[in-house]
Image 1 (cartoon, rainbow, N blue to C red):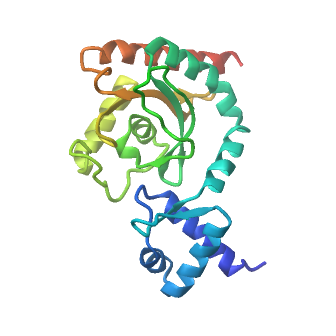
Image 2 (image 1 turned 180 degrees about the vertical axis):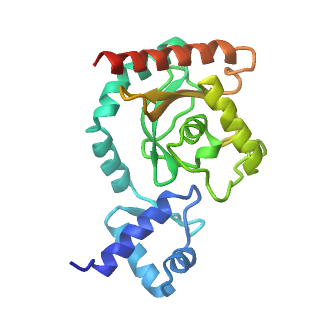
Length: 245
């Protein structure tokens, strides 16, 4: 059965918008799909009308719309792994005070599928459905280190701390495998640090990552060892629960 070209292109546009933090212009979408700008404009207009995309009137760039977020939340709420891990995310938040999250490999990126928010007024919030380049976050590094994701061909820079060279990244990932946990130090967003560990199932496979993220004003280098120990302990508890299941 042949695919419907306009539907396929609409889905391709959603994929394009989902992979960028800054959205995309009509020209950028047209170039990536190898179509003319008028066709790209009509497709984007249709997505906007149905709530699957939104247009920033200041920058004229297009972003994913609220309907995509709603569908994502509906999908995430039905994920068995999410239901299994959520009590451990609560434990992480309670023991560390910071927002705790669950992340999976998806489309070569790290996909955040659940979060238990910190009770502090100043906190880090990771919206469900966020796709982040794996070399920039602690959870992404865990998934890279254990072969759940391949190292991106281009290591995009998000802050001055982002690792952008392959050899230093490979050395860093070897250390992550050796340590059993990963850190990120303002590598995806300024002012944010993170810690993550692998989620290992009953077959001994790494299937996801859990961790915490918080402001550097609380997650100082002095407290990182203590927080890391707590994250590792919860990660071990998750692994034990899979073994007992």
